[in-house]
Length: 454
Image 1: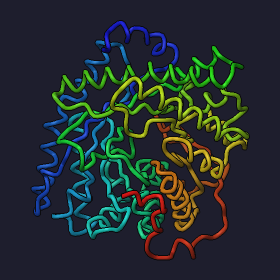
Image 2: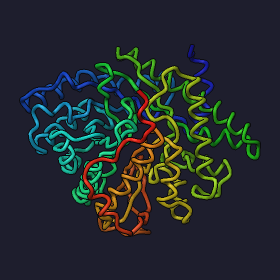
Image 3: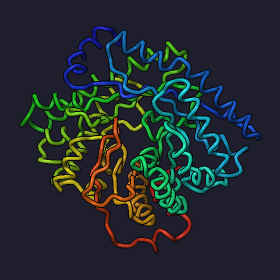
Image 4: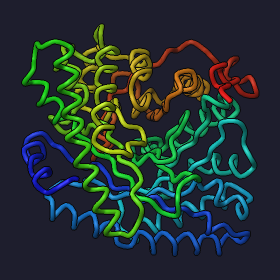
């Protein structure tokens, strides 16, 4: 059982090492909102979100006050909108009306973000899927807190290269439409392979069709806590290193489990999962990169980086699954560039490149995350980078993702400021050789042989 005294043991972690619950995310099914009339569908969506999530922020604040545990974000995820709007949306413009409705409802209940402006197209695209994808640039321009994701591949189905090619252009267009605001629209768009149904983190959260009508998922984060714990065992063996990470992850996850249970009871909504991902912020002392340095690297990107990250990710999962019966989502270590001060420093020092980050994604939780690239990067190059990352997820049977930001008007070596949790990022160089003949092939990349397990 989780009790108050157990939580009190974490006070030092909270005050000294920046332990927090990164998000309480309320997943809401919008399948009951499907309607052939667009206005009726939008009205149903608005009413359901405001009804189910009306007390979400209030509940999070009450838990913060009672247990003195910081809860950074309160968020909503919804059923992929390509499914919800398929009956009434006959054009990209129709889907944009739903995006505006989502933004309005999310602002009404006071959450930080809403995810689920999404399409699942790992094997093919319906007309609704294509219309939603085409609507993304304008939808992200005209809304403030709506986030979008597209799942273009899976281990079971392969990679839909038609969708990958389309998304290269969509990302470019999104950057153009939001160029006056640091191309911020691209920071709210994630391309996935093997996307999980229960991820509470943005921008990739959506409420899977296998989920119940509503569910509470919690994302808990504590890279600063892990770093502090490792400082006490500096120079010790790998066995001691692994045990320390595992025990620390156990304590972090117990905090998330408590918050999830409390929120579930207070809202009368089933508890889903705890996602124990180590999610950094730009704040000093809250960096996954600093953990890698504490393990023994001068900077992330140095030889040994992938091995060190593999150790961290695996031990975090091992500790987490002992603390909660329902660990899910992504769960591991995030390596976003703009959101991690240590990663930014590694890029600025020349230690970390996109190619090395791609290698690191083979053993971590997400993928190429929050990476700013030159504004003149061709759409086909963006699609090629996406295809590479999707292949890693497909072959390795893991979730992986791409969140690239071509910053219009910026060149390699310059910086872009996003603000808040998104931080700032140096513009990273990309390989300038052409891949358009590969990207412009039609169809899909077949699933790997190990996908055939029936």
